[in-house]
Each structure stands twice: as C-alpha cells, then as structure tokens.
Image 1 (tube, rainbow, N blue to C red):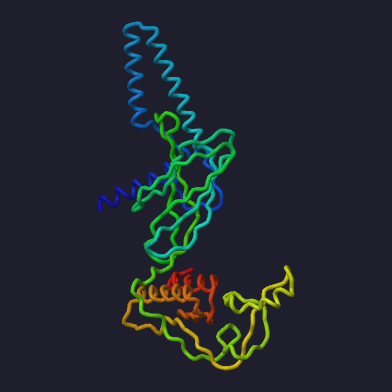
Image 2: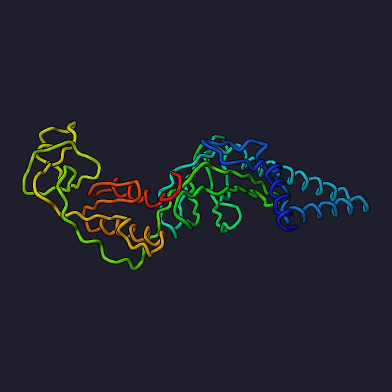
Length: 329
C-alpha cells in the first residue's frame, strides 16, 4: 500500500512539475515553459572545480586564477544558453502509423521542424514510460529544415495502440547541462491479430448462387459495370477502359447465371471449443493466405460481412474487423 501511495504521489508530482497532460492533437511547439534544464554529472563536477579554483585564487591572490575562473564560468553560462536553445521552439507533429500484427513492432512517424536560423544538433528522441524499452535515437535538424523520426513500440495485443509519451533531450554542446521536454502525440496504430502459425488449410469452396460482385458463374457474360472496391484485376474490361480514354472511369466485366464456387471465411463456423483469440488468429492467417494465392473469399465476423472479393480494400476491411472484434472502434 505504501508503494502504491508513493508511486501515485510521484506520478502526480511529475504531471504537475513537467506539465504531463493528456494526448495533444495537431502540431505542438516546445515553448520555454515546456523545456527543462539541469546540470549533468559532468556539469556538477565542473561547478565544483570552479568553486575550488575561485577559493584558491582568492587565498593566494592569483589574478590569473581569478581570470581563468571567470572565463570558465562565462563559458558554462554560454553553454547553458546553447543547450536550452537547441531544444526550445521545436515544432512537433505526428505522421503516419501503419497497421501491424500483434507481436510485431508498431512504427510511429514523427515530424520535427526547425523554423529558426540555427541548426539543432544531437537531439535524442524516444518513447518513455513504464514497460517501454529504452530506444532513443539521435537526430540533427538543419536550420529552417525538418526531420522525419520513426519510433518503434511493441504491439502486444490486437486493437488500437496509442502512442506512448515521447521524451526529447539534448546535452549539446559541452555536455555540462541537459535540457529535456515531453510530448504525448494523439496518435494510434491499429494492431491486427497475430496470424496462427500452424493453421489448417483454407476452407473448401462452397456452391453459392451467383451475384454481381464476383461470386457468380463466369459462363454467361452480361456486360460491364462500374468498378467496385474489391473487384479482381482479372475482371477489368480493358477494351472498354481504353475506349474511354485517360479520363474514363474503370469498369469491370459482369457475369450472370449458374452457381459458382465461393470460399467463405465464417467466424461462427469455427469450432466453439477454440478460444476467441485463436479463432481470430486463424481467420487472420486465412485472409493473408487467400490474398497471397489470389483466391476470392467471402468474410463474416459477428455483425460484419463482406461478399467474395480480393484486393487491398477487402483485405484491410476484414483485418480491421478482426482487430476490433469485441471492442469499440
């Protein structure tokens, strides 16, 4: 109980002292009140050396000793200004965060912009927080330039993964002082279920009545229709597209009549004895394998269903449904 109380008090103090609020949307500027600076161990040793030099110069009435002490002190003051300036007034903005599978590393892109006339050197950037591995990366940002930073965080569970808090710090130029700041971007990445390693083969195709989304038989050509997301590239009517010219819309061939074989990936059809996460992992593996083998597949998971199709849009929609199953989107 004492440990929990101590941890809560320390967390509250840190939030008040370092202004650790919630996630911040949009671009953020590191103003003066967001940048903190303290001496490093080398800086504390340097300060002790200055005190000893000053005491010795005064005791022995050494003019050159006093001059050296004042020169070193002014150097430390200039270094303090340069260290603070190296981090202050940086513009930070979140970038892209592409989906990943559970067990992989989530990639968060961050944009660091320097709109001042001096360069920024040896700025270290990394995630911070409980359970986060220490992975910091140094970057130089040119004057009136920008830098793209990609940070990694472990994606342990499926669903939405919010970006952890970010810490930026620098000890440029002499390492006597250390300036740092915190930023919590309003950024998240979608984590798909981890594909099952030894999943059974894809379900056998079933005889289904034809429809106009590609599940119909291919013996009776019925004409062309506007392209719809998920249509196979083999169904594109290239002759009609060529006639329409550069500004023409894509059209697909349309077949009618007969029954066609259709592969269905149905969550409800999986054995109830298997736990939910294993079933989701199996369906994830099947979706990836069907796309790799170019096999159209229908998909059904709870209230979400999609007719047989192929392509990136169909794949992303199915994997998104798997990732957010049983959770709020």
